[in-house]
Length: 306
Image 1: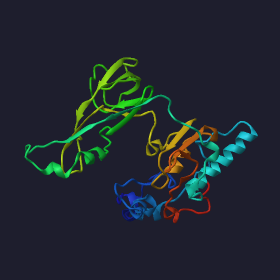
Image 2: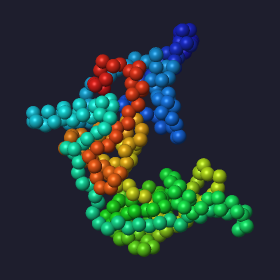
Image 3: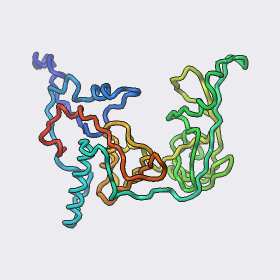
Image 4: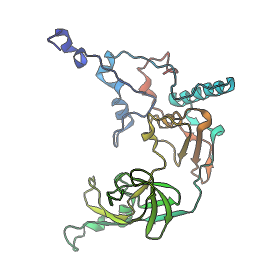
């Protein structure tokens, strides 16, 4: 860009206009095993280019419906303020007493445990495996592998994690509904694709992680499926739903997670929250995690209108 203007050499991106979109009230950059300070430092407003940015604030929540009656408009306005208070950290402990709902999935729960073992490439006389007992292998949780303790019910939606038979529609990512839970197999109907409605029996298979951070190789024998009738909070960013059922078996652990979860719904009547208590049963209070320092160099006058 210096051929057009020599002063552009000192400007970010050569002086070209760049549009950044985002919400600092939502989940910040995800860095594995990073501290709070490292996460905040990785945010855009901690970058050297932030001083060259002009901030434009959005003043209307496009996710929420406008409301037809005066009562609906008042409820939506109150709910919008409550969501903003969650995002700003004004509510360190959230008491969603008005929107608690019992979301237990009906039916009998079936448990399936994996068989985990080390892949011994040096023979049976190797004592290396004694340093990693089976209990430790069972505790390893990787996104590419099913859980050691797989809990499913008849009627729940699951997703295949391996290609079993592509011609028959059993591919990695295929969504299915569980029809029967047998001791050594799971009977499912395909929900998507050209083979929708077809019934298949899913067996246990042997699986190994493709990429691991541990200094050993291991394998598991388990059903290659995982629950997928719901999405994780981190995956829900950018989504808008008429109904949101939020299940919190434990409190959120990073900035903006609770704000993202409660702001995905289009109306207050569509939000239902179920919170597990540490003492057993359910509770109506949960912690709200906010890194206030990420707001320090943002426009403060209109923090409530984003």
